[in-house]
Image (tube, rainbow over all chains, first blue to last red; front, side, top):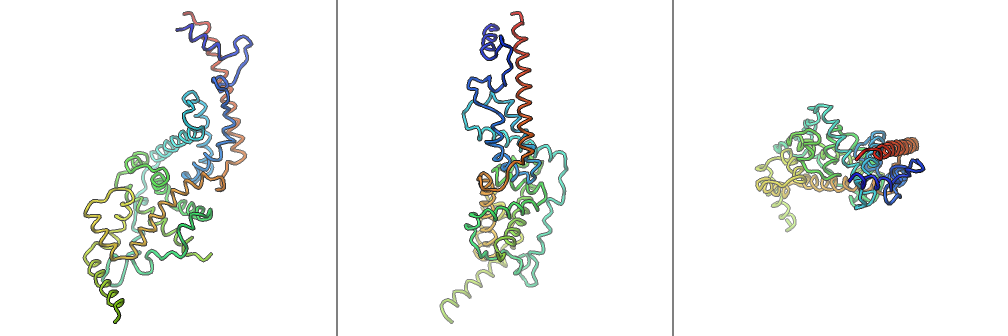
Length: 221
Length: 123
């Protein structure tokens, strides 16, 4: 056993010449160069992180951590998926860990689950108490939603609307809608009760719908 | 009165009848939101369908909120598109490359030391 190990190791190092070869080049297919990852996948990973973190420097840090972690687990990458898929998988884990950690550090703010700001939307003078106020109800959208999805400017507006939400609320919404996590998973990651989750989703949707309405669909452009 | 007028008046009367007896929009909107995340109970489904029959603003609400869901998912897709603005800054790019280089070198040095040592281990 020991001699097998030694001869395997000998195959992979230049023991006689004493040359140090980069760890990556010691793999049987020595074509993986970590610095190339930065050029090929860096921007993609950055964009993936920045839409979820809404903060460029936090996104950069996470990309850095992801690539460093990737070097360390290079032996576990068996080439089963593309490099990008594998790296994105690592990034996803780092993101979840990041959310878990920051949620633990900051206690839940009661304001995050406060939906009283929407009460005025349902105030009326007539007998239909609790129904949408006529002027504050959802408007008829003049431009087509499908057309909006074709335009980069619309996504910039959506991104800005997301940034206006309190951090935990926005994280809850994006973990649900972008990552497709279910309510139990999100509760665990963000330290929420099920009720917190429903209220935050409701709040996020009410605010975002109104925000994209004002800033895109009824705006004169 | 034309047939259209009569139909309109009947529809409006039905709507008012329903809206007086059903939970108001303020109570329904959280259910509409929840319908995007979980299965509704039978009671919730019935209440929702009846309310939506009678209330146009709530119909707009759920349509627009469903669209929001789709758009957010596409935001995720859009950022995968090369045309979406957003790149690693030059300084971050360089810093990460340097770190990766340094790490790879350290890893190579330490693994070579371990390998060198292991050759001297007595079986």
